[in-house]
Length: 316
Image (spheres, one colour):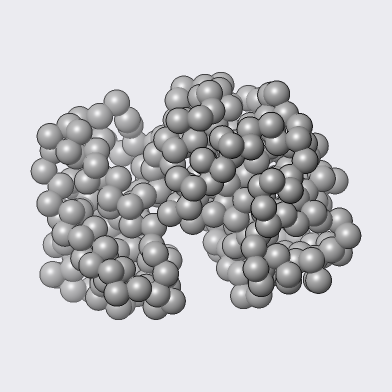
């Protein structure tokens, strides 16, 4: 099996180690200092589960799509930030022949609807999405640490395609130490992650506090309640489904378990703002706002969070 990883952050390096650990041929698309670090050091995975270390001679690193050989890959894993999807999908369209005839694209990202840029250029039978709530941290450019594990990685299709063709990938990731499964209901699990991220990420970044602190203020709780209620209205109006009957069912779990379990965590949006780089807010609250407009739903709280984060980004 031949796999190309696009995006050499914590998730990308972690999954590259998973596949190398199961004897797949792995190439990584990276640039600049990250490409240099991988060429010099190879890659490592540490933290929870099996530790891996692979020498540089086992990994091909590409910095330009034009360098990549034709008819080379069975799978492309998209592990970049969602802000890069428009550019990556266009570059892959220009270089479609790097994928084998039956090659698949699997998107390992935050947010919902991240398959849409790729569906402009690739048939829906070739584009899949993954729900990842395993925590990966990249403290050095070639090292991924698995920091948190709560539930398996889930792989499926938002376009109602049969995911059984991806069982070999799920089995290989599982064999590497991180449980992974295929599912016919990936949308439900992606919306579960959206509910959590949309309620916490942007607001925590704006207020500069951890997830737990947000739950201790009646004012921030009121904002989170409104975000969650609006998302349920969007889901109800759309063709999508999630795992709970209504917003009250979800909020009981959210405040009793999900937030306490991650009390001291600061969101990726918070980290991006501190580093003065673009956030993934378009794929989170921004997606809710877009869908709300499509179905004529009031999502003003999500829109305020989205607008505030975008305003902060204007100074970058």
